Structures are given as structure tokens and as C-alpha cells.
Image (cartoon, rainbow, N blue to C red; front, top):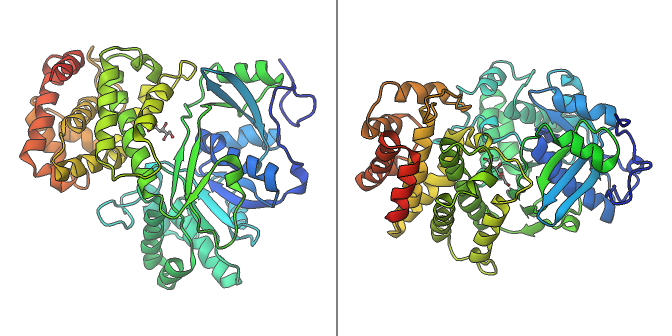
Length: 489
Ligand code: CS2
């Protein structure tokens, strides 16, 4: 076995390394949610920014729940490899932007100190849709969320996003330190505003005077983030070893493409992320809707359909001649709900998406994307369905995606094998579907679950029929028949 990656000396020439001296740059960012996506996305942009313009912008990474990331990264001094994979080839890049990594559970004091430190100018987050504990109906906290409940009960020992950020913002105010900018990088609509509302509501309940401070003094720029980054597979570490000649326990694989669109609202300063290709705009909303509806919506649709047809990876789905036209139809239907976007060619964006999904080098599991459907479908499928309804556009693609998700939520493959939904509402979904044997009753029970589907859709007979007809075919004749029928329609 090769020696562990601990420094940059003697790496092969074709491995890209940080274009700056790591020891001369301090930290300026605390990142919550130290998963593969952060390592493949914001940390790479920060690496580019440090190389181009320097600054004290290295990152302190924090995992809220697991201890794996810090255990992998700390022995490597924060260094890790991103293996970029595209049809044009495989390219290894060692990223140096990460300064240190902590698991909240193991080192809560270090996390508290980092958030309170005047050097920290930005706190960025990738904690997934379900990590926030937001009640989508009110925009405030969801008291049933485990971390919200725990932090409301004991705000001085926070475990979740709202508790950590509100305590830190309160401490900084007391210390006379300017607030950090809060940068949400999850796939949620108007993610910055959403997080601001969540923190204000949390503060109202534990330290009411802070709510106004958060509204007035803290910046929450919205962002659209994009890079397909599968969970690490068993072969990733061996591939990294072949490419860099070191054992890297923190290596990840991602597609070569990446995109970051950010509202430029950083009162405490920011890295030159534009050096890495980030685009600063006044209003992220159109880009974010484009990405959530076209990319993520099609991803969810193909994940449920593909999983039930026995396809393990997205690339396998893209090799199924029945599915490709349905995926393209979904992408086109999603594009139809978007307002005109001057300067953006949606047709070429759509073509690129199909090519990205088909990337033969990525093992992106349909089961991974299928996770957390109740948190994903609202912005990916139902928001565009509502817009399509209002514009009098066809609902077929969204109804098909919804039916595929409901079929998936039964938790059994077509061969009868059980699987976990891996959804925060798994128990409620399962008990709603338990014992239902008709598509109508399954749909009616789900439509009755609180805060799930938009009321507007639940009350629309045409929508309900469109979903039920498809679900009925999926349940009685199987997914392949439902797909074929859809192609004929
Ligand atoms: C995927 C996303 O897992 C999922 O739900 O749709 O993680 C997707 O790969 C990224 O948003 C791409 O930027």
C-alpha cells in the first residue's frame, strides 16, 4: 500500500495541486455539513480563489452528525483528492482549502470557538434538505424535527443548524463582533431567505431580541449550486491511489462540470470565487428554479422509475431506450414552467443534462437520489406542477414522476423485496400506504398527510386523476408497462 496523503511533495505532475502556500492563509469560513458535495463544490471554488487572489479564506469543516469526515481528513492535514470524471478523461486534483475538520459530537467547544471567532466571516452549509428542520407551510421551525426539538429545549448545547447559528450570532453580538454571512448551499428554493426565516423563528423562541438582529444585520445570500457528486464507491480510494500514488482516505469522485450562482451580498467580505467560475448575480431565483426543476426534478423522476426497473445507477437508466425519451420529456416540461431567462439557452441546458446523466464513469445510485423524497418533491416536481396548472400546460410529466414516487414509497420492489425509504417521513408514509390496494386510495391518503403535497394539487381533480391513472398501471401491471403506456400517449 502507498504512504498516506499528508503533504503535497512528490505527487505526479499531472495531479493538480493548490496554487498557493497553505501555511500562509488563515481561516475565514466555517462550513457545516462536511460531505462529498462540499468537498467537490465550495471547497474547490475556494481553492481556486485562494490560488488566484489569496486571502484568509481557508475552511474549518464541521460534521453535525458523523465522525467519519474528520477522522479521514485530520490525519491528512485536511488534504483530499477530487477525482473529476468525464467522457474526456479522469483528472485528479488535490484540494488544500480545508484547514481542519471537526465532528460536532466530539468537539463541540472547538465548533463553538470557530463560530464565535472574529476571523470567521462566512458560515456556509450543505446539510441536505432535511437537515434544517423547517416547516415548509409556515417557514418557521418544525418542532417535530429532532435537532430543533433538542435545541429549543437546550439552546446552550446546540446539535442542529438553527441552534448553532443562533447561539453563535448571539455570542458575537455580545462580544461586539460583526455577524458572519450565512451561505446556504442546499437545493432549496430561495435557500438564503428560507434559512433567515428559520433562524428568526428559532430566535423568537429562545432569545427574542436576536430575531430582529438577524433580520436586520445578518446577510443570507441565496445560491444555486451544481455538481453531480455520487456517494463514494468501493473503488474510489483505489482509483485515487493509482492516480496520486498515495492512500487518500478522504478521496471523492465527481463529474467535471460544476456551477455556482450566488447573490453578491457579503458585508464581511468573501473569497474571489469568481476565479473558479462562480457567477455573482442580483437574483438567483431563475437559475435556482431552472436547476431544481430541470436537473433535480428529472433526477428524482428517473431515480424512482429506474430503481423500480432494477437500474442501479443513473448511467444504466440512460441506457434504457424506453426511459430516455421520458426523461427528456420531463426536462422539457420543467423548462416550460420557467419564466424567460435572457442569455440562458434552456435547450442547450437540457441537452447538457442528458449528457451529464449519461456519464459512463459515475456510479450515481438511483437509490441515493431516491432518498428523502418528501423533502425533495415539493420544489422539484410539485412547484412546477402548480405553475404548469396555472399556465394551462400539460401535467403528464409531473403526474408520472409523482406516481413513480408513490409507487416507490410502498417500499417493495416489483419482485416483492423490501427496502428502506430513507425519508424523514418514512413512518408516516408507510402507515398512510399500509393496506391500501388501489391507486386512488393510496393517493388520497398521501394527499391527506399534513404539509406534504400543495393543497392546490390535492384539490385538483384533473391532477389527482392524472396521477392515479399512472399509479394504477404501475401497481397492477408494473413500471415497464407504465413507461410504455406513457410513451404511447
Ligand atoms: C440529486 C442531487 O441526490 C439528489 O437528490 O438530485 O444531489 C444532484 O446530484 C445535485 O443537486 C447536482 O448538483
